[in-house]
Image: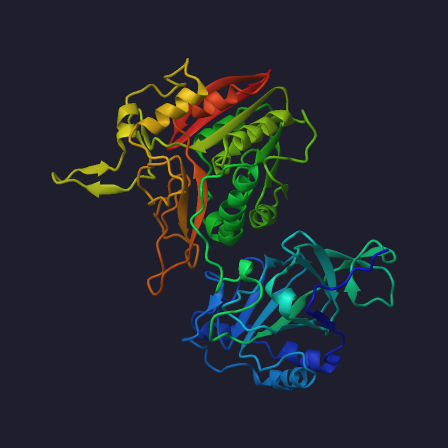
Length: 536
């Protein structure tokens, strides 16, 4: 048996502090003090947090070096830090401290501490209870490490810069059953396993703020060194997967909380579809996001899945049944669902083949006679006199408000909205038509200007991450609106999501390539093309 080792540069030091020192550190935390410290986020969605020295900004995963917090680090930490310096666990005294308090069931998503924000050595003291922390290498190697109560985690080198670390939100951890094994790697090959019930845990994480760009040996994951070229349209499945990983999967992990705060109102026609299903129907929401449709009807047995763990966690917090998976491969038995919905998901797949494979997976889940509802973004943001709220209004010279629409949209604006107006058209003819109306085929994916007409079917749509997710009363959002206001004091981070916006008739034509499927209905709904499929 090959022994499993800790990630390079990772150490766990047992019993760094005594029980009495642990008690003193815990009692020193006065959460109420946060109320008089500006710019400190006292409570996050998944845990309680305090910052000292410098605030860690969760909107940009960095610190503002020019705005130190008053008071510096607490004096009670001096003895601990002097011990760490003397023992060689750190090479210089930290100037930033984050205290996290985790209740049973809470965790933190996998992440790498931003390279440009902090120096090499990062240390974290676990108080109150032990925990299992998960480490993962970019190529997929994963290691679960037990952090005992009163132990110190030391991350440097590869473990700090290259491996992600996180805590899975759950109320029990799997640990080794051996009483003598307090620390180490959880592995089925080492003794018996047992469950350890979590208790409240508090971590003190110390870091040194970096004053110059990072020059580590891992440029592929270093924000100081990495220079991302403009992505190209994918030529093969491998490139398609890479684009979706970077411009869909990674982005939703970063924006999940802000995204969820703008997704609370179910769309009426989706609700209508669900409530028309027979009582007791089993329904899969593939790409469920924050679960806003999972609680629409108590007469249905609904479950959701999504590629974003952060969004699945939000669904779980609402009491919904949801799990993490890719829409290309849903781990559910074939023919087990009475209905499926896929709302604003398939447009994130970057090739025709992958979009078709996702639809085929929906069909696989359905029993004969089962129905699926699919929504995708429409290239036509005005259709049959329906104007999508996504478009930005501008003032015309005569004082009237006009919507910014493309020539393509105007040409199609008077067509009937039930079904395609091109019934005998082939898929290639559909694509030719979509590209013919003043549209340029880009070798590089263009970045879309929010709330304007689409001039390319394949593009990157910006998401401006807002610091604070609550909307003002009366501030309406359209379907999947992306134009978010920015912070008045400093620019907000911008993430780019890949989209393939569908032209009229394209979605139906893809569906007709599926076996044993009847397109029952197709329609346009607020900037989306929509179909209802029935499995024959």
